[in-house]
Amino acid sequence: MNLTLLRATVHRNRASAFWFTVGLVLYSWLMVWLYPVFSQGEYQELLERMPQEIIAVFGGQNLGFDTLGGFMQAEYLGLMWMLIVCSAIIVYAAQSFAGEIGDGTMEFALSQPVSRLSYAITKAAGLVGYALLLSAATFVPIQVFGPRYEVEIEATVFLQLFVFGTMFMLAVGGFAMLLSSVFRSAGRAGAIAAGVLVTLWTADLVSNVSEPAEVFDPINVVSHWQPGKIINGEAIPAESWWLYGVLAAVTLAGAVVIFTKRDVA
Amino acid sequence: MGDVIKTASLTKFYGKTRGVEGLTMRVPAGAVYGFLGPNGAGKTTTIRCLLGMLKPTSGTAEVLGERVSLDGTGLRRRIGYVAGEVRLYDKETGRWHLDYVAGFRGGRGRLAEDLIERFVFDPSKRVKELSKGNKQKLALILGMAHDPELLILDEPTSGLDPLNQETVYRLLDERVAAGRTVFLSSHVLSEVERVCDRVGIIRAGRLVAEESVQALLGKRLREIEVRFGQPTEAELLAGLPGVDNVTVVGGDVLKARVKGDAVDAVLKRLATRHVVDLQMQRASLEDVFLEHYREDRVARELDPMGEEGR
Image 1: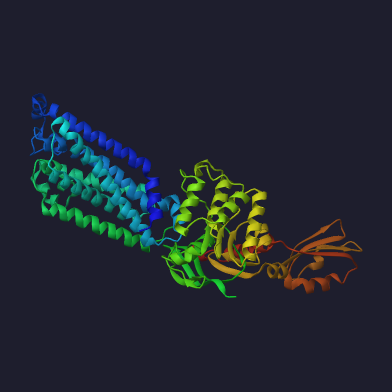
Image 2: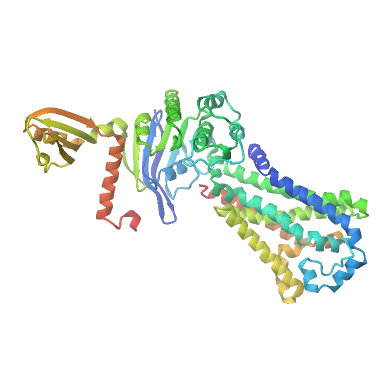
């Protein structure tokens, strides 16, 4: 890993990282503030009148909205959070290789005495750091502000959310980085990564309302993201850990290997 | 002294498109080597292969005694590179870029400040606020600030005013005097003539000529102007190989362009008349360069299914 490159990467992403972090902190704060109000009767009645398919869109089926887990999944962590963090992570990953090649700045960076391996590992380390930051910006405010509104999450649950959320981002980011190591344009790498994610989300949505479609769930990263269940005290299945872990490790390693062997100008 | 750059049958294809093909060349230490060719001839591809940014399809390249690889960190420490199209981080300042490069190279020396002064460059501005010329100045400062053993410059004076061009030429002279080597690609032939001592001409991905600038100019084209004691006609030089552009001005002045090996025959033919005055000028590098490409165009007209037609 190269510290100069890591510092430069952090510096160049500071503005977007700042705004995503602030946005997530405020969103998390808002959710724990609203939960006591929304867990009251009128909200429940409203939800009961909604079609199951709509509830499924927000990942709220099988959870019950009167629970903190159900509320957080439906209103925040099930869909909106995924959209926010995946946007941030995909943009970063797509820019890491393909973006720099497309912009022509890779030629400048790699005319300096930094090895490609070091360059790629540094960019991957940046992705890990970014995922940890966004995870912290999401879950720490729930833990910090929650008690003021009588929303309390056990430390073990917080830790699981934090680590599992980070793993989810690394699985998505690793895939985007793999595409970035192949293409010459951040736009193309990012668009394909986003397209695949939307396809997975759609597949998950269909599987929520159609039993035959559940066949894809075991390999669908979106289907495995069930923060509501974690908040409600359910254990994260081992296969979910494995899926995220293997996907993140394989895609990041693949991105590093491909980058060290490709043309960069 | 040994060779600083050596390539052997260096070939790079982008799919089916040729970048450079079978390039074999040597750049001696301490030289300012001009690498000439029109757009698409393969100059930038060659440079990128030398820097390990592109993986050659076949052939080898050796720089500063090391075989070029995609991961040649040690080699890049000894090389300064200025790209043909300067692409830097738009939102960052010149100072940020200087610190960035210094971070990789273990600190910024006095030379960087000296270059900033000599180019009268303001490093506090963001790259996006800089004119093309100022971006070029920044790229030159970044490429030269660590006093590299080998400078690889792709169109180094692009966008610079004549004053700053002269600064670049002086800097190159100083680098060479200090024992450094310069590999320079350029379209500006007067510039090549001014700073280079050897020239390689690349055409359609292949090196078609390589010699010292003086030898190239000396043995190639000459412009002659002859004043005769009586009226003359263009047909006087008819049938002589290597002679063209024959014109008669004012009835008694004959002008022609003569290839180096045709001089003897021309002088003998002229001597059959009463010659009052004779001027002979070596053609500019530009003429030599164009002559190479004229030959290429003729060859392509004769063989329309040539390299690029396949």
